[in-house]
View 1 (cartoon, chains in turn yellow, red):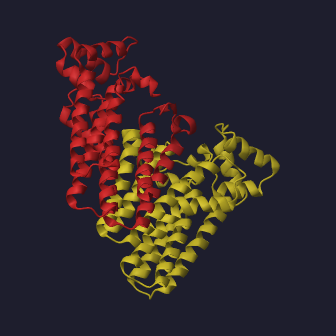
View 2 (view 1 turned 45 degrees about the vertical axis):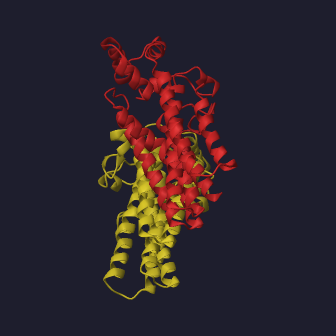
View 3 (view 1 turned 90 degrees about the horizontal axis):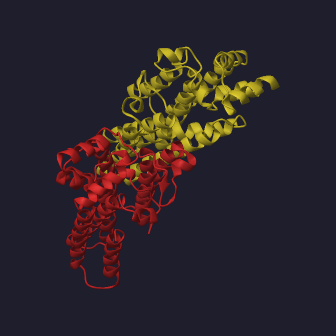
Length: 258
Length: 258
């Protein structure tokens, strides 16, 4: 339980810092911490949670757990930096995009699920299976998130539609629409995402182009494939309530995009 | 050496985040990272350095070292938050101010010096002596820093004079001048530091009041007392090059205020 709290603290710390970095006004449908209290408390309380997570891990006393979670924390920060580097760059490749997603999202999922096997002293093959489950679930989750950012469903979840577009984030829906678009359409993406010149009608135009090229549908399809890989990793474990619970998380994750 | 690098990484991470939180344009006489690259990379690279420091500590493998440095990291963040809470509040007490200083500055000095005794497997009394040395040195350092912020000497060190004043930071020079001032003078401090109403002549006025009440001189005097406590802690160790080096740091620290 204490280690689960550590993962949650690390996650909350990254969300606090993310909202400062992205200047987000909303988080889970409510005013974000930086909107309510300003950037300073958000940065510092994030630092505190991060440090407190490490204190709890040290109290737990497992160097292997500390190694897994401190590596995940470093990988998250690297993923966020890589995301900054690819931002506003339409020449970003799918491979680079997936590297960002693996870093900023999937690494913590994988660490959290792997640690379960470590503290239960399970064999290496189960540790690897839980790592694969978490990593694929994390990628599926992020792909759905990136599709939702361009979907009306987003508003129901308490987020604003088009945040990624306004910030010029290069996500899979954009990469697919860009790759499948005409030269004129690519000009549109370059102007709006690289040049950051956006008019009132541009978000609607972006949604139209994604619709035309099936970019959102195919992003969710890709998420489903990663979800299937997560489910396949669970085959290493006997059927039971725990396995069904883990499988249910995958279904829930994909169903957000319905 | 690896653990010394950890302390330096944690320190650098806090400086990166500090400069974002304080919106500082200068660090050690050069443009600060946030001024050069923006807040986003500063927050994220700080997070990365912090995580990397923990990875290095885990590789080192001592849970005692991890406990000391993760506690210091949490204490630093608490000290910074406490500083935010006392900012712009002239009813701050000297005890609260010292608590901020112990948290944001002295905790890492104490952890760094204590770890030296831990890795050398020295007895508890030497560990405590090195902790006391570091903690008192850290407080002395910060007191001198707070005095320098109102001194022309500051410019020679590549910092701007009056940053603390402009931000409404309640430091010892302010507390002494406020406590020793007339009711009219307290009105000046309330207007400029609490109300944040500052005109062009106000920094000069603040310096004049500090001069009149010996606030800077007495802050440095107080620093000297903490420096002496740091030197006294070194008495637990035999004379030699190492002890002389540690004593020299205290002298250097106080001499900055000359």
